[in-house]
Amino acid sequence: MAKIGLKGFWAADFAETSAGITYTNGRKISKAVQLNENKTINETKLYADNGVADSAYAISDNTIDMTPDGFEADELKKLIGLGQQSITINGEEKTLAVETANDEGVAVGIAYIVQERIAGVTKHKVKVHAKVKFRPAESTENQT
Image (cartoon, rainbow, N blue to C red; front, side):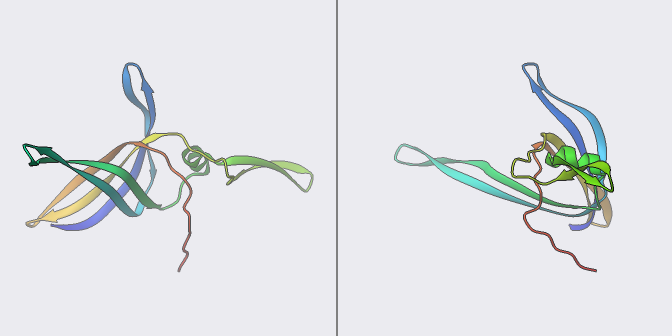
């Protein structure tokens, strides 16, 4: 199997009620450049009759680093929960999106498509993450 592509980042608004989970407003939020997913898996051994009878596994942490081909400003404000600040430029008041210590985005469902080639056949695998909260990148890298 050879991974040969990554296509698009999609999001849908997430809501959890007593009736269950619903998704609305599904949309493509960006073209995809790169994605790295890092999971931390905890393992617990289960004992019976003085020996290991089974093992239980659970994902305790899952970090997804997405590199999009840009976001629309309104989408970014919603996903990351950017604060706003008003400033005056040449006598005209403008409202800007700014990063603050209290930024917190809304939960959304996200998805992306991984393109693979297996035995000469191209296949597409859709990966869906049911509930994700975004935060700004802790570091940035720029190159040309």
